[in-house]
Amino acid sequence: MNLRDLITDDLILADMKARDKRTAINEIVAFMCARNGISEENARKVEAAVLRREGRGTTGIGKGVAIPHAKNCGQVDEIVAAFGVARGGVPFAALDGEPVRLVFLVVSPRGLENDHLRVMRKIAHLARDDKTNRFLATTRDFSTLRAILDEVDEYFEKK
Image (cartoon, rainbow, N blue to C red; front, side, top):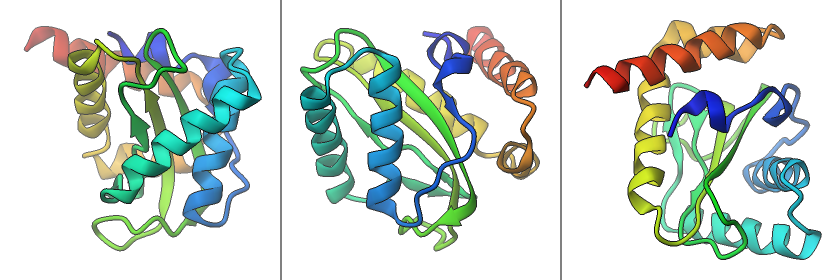
């Protein structure tokens, strides 16, 4: 499962408006669901699943990155994702206490737990680099994001 295939240009929310964690999750879930043709009713269920997962511990992994997610979600038939940029930062109870500027949402159905974990691992790998994170938080040129996603996919293909 390639990040580039999951996070297409139409699944990039370049200017999130949220100012708090719950609103950020609502915004990115609504955005992703709308782009994937998921009904409002099912979008609310996806959001509830993501919030339940968030209730077990923050998905703010540090360095300005959060990966809210839900697996075993009956509202999707395949892994779906979106990427959002909160330029002003959002308090997200991240592990390092810093605001989150980059939000990667991942939602998967039952039976794809291993693929879900593979996607999460790739995003976490991408998020390790401070320079990449700063660039993604400030750029409006998302063609470079495509190149970054390709690099991460290639790195994992070689492993």
